[in-house]
Length: 106
Image (cartoon, rainbow, N blue to C red; front, side):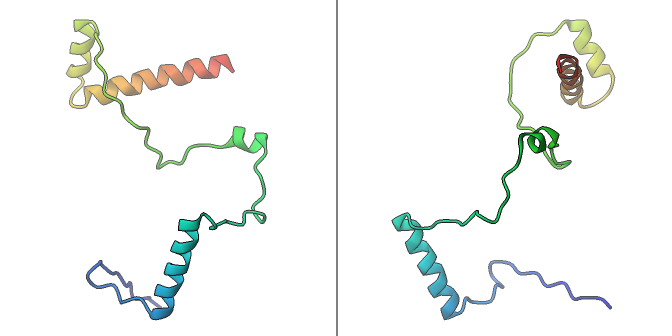
């Protein structure tokens, strides 16, 4: 049994019902007055052990920051000789060293 995939764009979305509009207006007014409170009482708190065991998602992509760095000419030539992506390769080498240093410290 296959299910039909339904997709919408902003142009093809069905219009909101009067009840949906009223509910959105009510929520917006709660936010404006600062009365919108989220009940988190049913969410268990995480322990320190759980935080320590947490891992980044495989979809996590660290934020890049542009820098200016001076490297030896022969190092740069070697990186470039490996093919396209020498900056990414340099980042990977630095990350490997960083992670290795962090593992030693722990």
